[in-house]
Image (tube, rainbow, N blue to C red; front, side, top):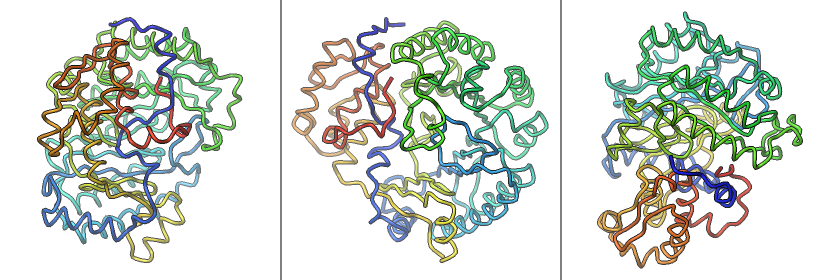
Length: 461
């Protein structure tokens, strides 16, 4: 493991995008609506976009949660009224009907992800209904990756068995932190024994991959307490670990206003948590994938990174080839060809658009040629840690050193800091540079470079 210098960590600790897309969602415009999304779907069918006819990725957003977690910045609806799920499932069916009126039924799907909110807010019968509805509209490929986010407080071994029967082969457990004081401070109490038991059950049931989500920088955390959580998680041996830095943005996310700023860890303590966690997971045999992801060496994600097959989408790092993403549900974001589109963010608006027979898209973006070039560059950096000028030149018919002259000049500073190796043919991140991959990718982000008001993004560290 390269030495993480605290001074370097502090210098790089600025707000910046996670680059699950480029351009990022804050650049979407309301001029892009249902008609533009429908045209993108039609172009996929007609072969007018690259990759047309290939397998789809499908995302379904379930917004409901029984209780609020104070740190949460997801689009969610806090309710104990489980009766609200019925109307939402009807709306999802209606949306899928509208999508398949354009795409046709039996579209092959190689990747499915249920996110939220809390997907396991739905009952077993409702999850069965939803999966049955999806299978009526699309074709789930036998070797596909079908994952669901799981709140450990909402499931039992029997519920996990039901998820396996429905065809899910991957689970993502939201743990965040095992420390009791931290859990109380963020209003999310879940005993470690409960997670241990569910992990054992998932292994015995034969799920292909299990992920654990963690957050550092939460209230009441310290480098010492989070190090204990890291050891506890490593002892569970999940196949993958996603470890996100908490972004305290109470003006944007109302639940965060319940967290007093004085109980948040200092910037120095956040850096200590990050550096200790990286060292801890590597010492326990995990490989660093990039940004805030780790995987065991035999996990397909680690293999994909070693073989240069890593991809990135709205769910983070993936082994699945770059493909069109159809997203269903309130606030969900689709990517079809050179376009992004986002559904209405409130349930009332989402229902209203569907009742009028419209796709529930309220904003989006048709990418320009420059956007496509920069997306290719940024994703190459984020996934492979390198950039070949020749490959970009051949794909986009540009002279890379001229097109990105200012950006390449800026890279020299990072080369001097030991973050990358730069030559006439391109550049490659060093092992140290991988820890700052977001910071380096920002060099090629035209929007971030021209906009210094980055507070809407989380911190890179």
